[in-house]
Amino acid sequence: MANNPQPSCPTCEYHHGTSGRPVTGSDKITCLDCGNSWKEFGATRETAQKSIPAPVSNKPAIDARVFKQRQDLDKVHKIPVVNGRKKVDLPKTTVKTVLIAASMICVAVLLTSLVGRVVFQHLDDRPLQIGQVKLQERVNSRGHRVFTVEGQLTNRSTTGQKIPKISIVLRQTNGHEVYRWHHNSPLPILRGGGEAKFASSVQHDNPLIAYAEAIFED
View (spheres, rainbow, N blue to C red):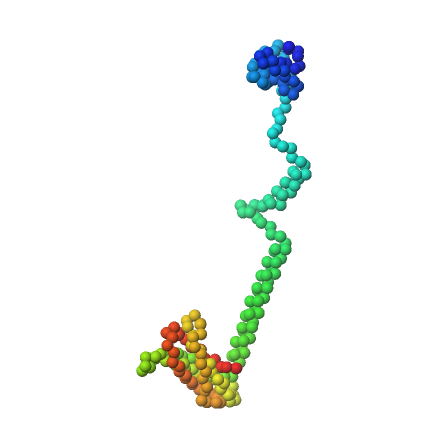
């Protein structure tokens, strides 16, 4: 029995083939079926080690192509860490789009500023100017609110200028227009370098009126 390369268990008579050899110690053999141990003279440690089958892994084999695909996915989704923070590399197309959008915004802001300057410069170049606009409020004998808007006309040129129709606007604190009417100056022409005051009143019972504007109508 000691020289038998395929031993059998003396208890359960389980025959151990080449694929299921019993566990072997220094001088004992343990049956893989019932767990019985017995001595088999002549068995050496070297023979026992050779008779122990290699462990079989329960993990399924991974195809080489699948493994390569997993590696490629790991490289794509791997986010590098720089100074303790994750660094995300945006696609070149995304970066280019962001830069173009930022440039367009800057150009739009610059154009708006230039147009605004041109408009205000155009208004300042007018020979006739309206200034010192004031709003006064009172209550008449009938208990109604009456708003009076006063201002001053100035001719900055050296020649006489025709005074156009003046629009007077009452506004709330947030700039919302409440009421508008027109004022025709009794003075048709203002001489060069001259000044003239104007005043116009309207009855309106809106208590939210905060200020007034006076502008020329083109």
